[in-house]
Image (tube, rainbow, N blue to C red; front, side, top):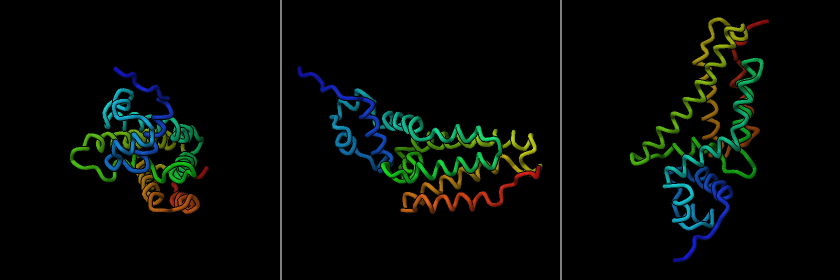
Length: 196
């Protein structure tokens, strides 16, 4: 019985991320994944599990490598800067020079069939998790007097997430980083900051 060829699982996972990011969950075939990684299908199964498992591992890797701006944004002193850093970070990730356009989570979910409902639902849960973190930060901002008393922290969190997700779709369609940064600044023009 032949031995399986050894390969660098970290490099292979990065290649898997790139394929899913560019093609989405259902658009990525095993032929795409084996071609990108240089690993035969049995080796991919052995290292990462089935396609759904592989996609979830790719999402975790994407978060680890590309989404570090988000927890940093939550640490900003003012809520408008939390939103700005979130949207600017998203614009940069969506338009990276050496990465596919858009967001892996959005690209992965845009065209899911009934068979991929678990993936779509999982991606929606991840987005809600990020929105919940933003909302909690904006609740604190209102309590600290950084937001106007009538500002709705939950609506603001939905707003920031919606703009970010829309920017991802625009990037996939060819929008430049400069265009997305302009959108981000326009979105923040009416931010309900309290006068200090």
